[in-house]
Image 1: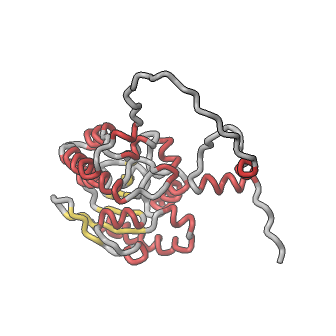
Image 2: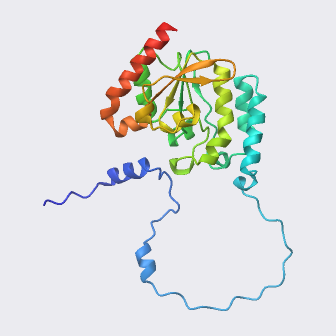
Length: 268
């Protein structure tokens, strides 16, 4: 057996970045093994200090979030009262009920043409989206641009957003609680855009918006009805571009979905 060559520094950095490790906690590396080998310092008596006045504890940004049921009810009420996309964005910008807001850099609301006939909805922003404040601008965003470009669409003829408007720390999967808190906002978002075709990108977006427990392998390519309360929008799940980057063999099935989307737009 020939041993595999050790990864280069560039390959290691690319691996860590893909895993969501995009910041350092210290300026210098720490040898944890050396710390284990070093003998513990001798115990010393704690100095006796004079009593101090008790000050109010500092409140971190994420600690003021209300209880989940209160946050969900607050999100529903706020979203229901938004008459326009601009008003919805402002309400979301000022919403304090989701702890993700306090770990993200900024709100990632949407990109594209709000008058478009087609709306794409992913799961949550990543690192690049958190920096720029726009959805799908990293590697998966470039692939999405190529995908929609293949059927004659671009960001002036399509509208793109996510279920979750704030980046989860380290690109982790949003919790069910976080998803339920943000759900009223994306539901109102879809109502206000009112597209002819709704495309859910990936399993989390599909299961959240289309109320199904089936996986993306079973749901992709099948038409669903998304009820806004005013009308029923045709909805089609397909693979998330990030998944296609990891599993390019499924691009053939994604192309079949894109053709079905183009056909639906042409016939609407």
